[in-house]
Length: 265
Image (cartoon, rainbow, N blue to C red):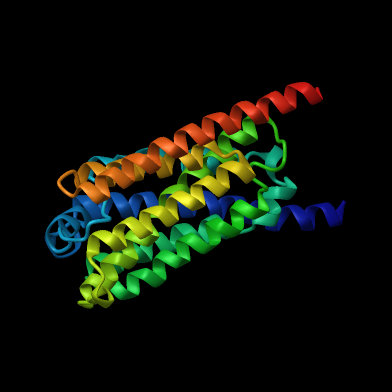
């Protein structure tokens, strides 16, 4: 009995810390838009200082943060339940989501303070914990209950998908702020290269993990980049082409995967 109580206390602390970190990150993000540092919001900075950075998606794409935060709140509340206290996958994930949320708060401050190169470190502080958590949860590889799939796996897949794109965008912004010349390679070519890398990562996730949520977030971002760069045919055609290819690949892969499950059952 004593052993069980000793085990449950740190688990309870982890549950509370995770939900608290989620709520704090949402509060900080909200405040940064209502009362932005120096009176300029993240969106305004992106649309003015970095209007020439071609890999930034169209403004509407950032509405996905609403979905991300809804998912994170659902995650935080679900993992807080007593029945989830000793969920081995959540125990193994530890404080990773809390770390990602804290890093997100740091990123908001650094970006608004115009410390763009340093903001890349904070972005890695979001990306790396989410990648490790994605692995530890065995998303797409381990069969779990419908509730766990919806309230644990789905929120992390969506969050990681968007941060995967955001990291590349943020690196581009950081380099632009340092007046990097791209080694003489045209910005549109660099943009296509980065979009292709993102597309390949999404294809691998689809084939190995069958993670539709992650793939669709990448498609969402690629299409939004294409729409913003509609006047640059190379970028627009690449984004639309990758988006369509990923959608078809994921659909075909899902049909094959579900057919295999049905046959095995």
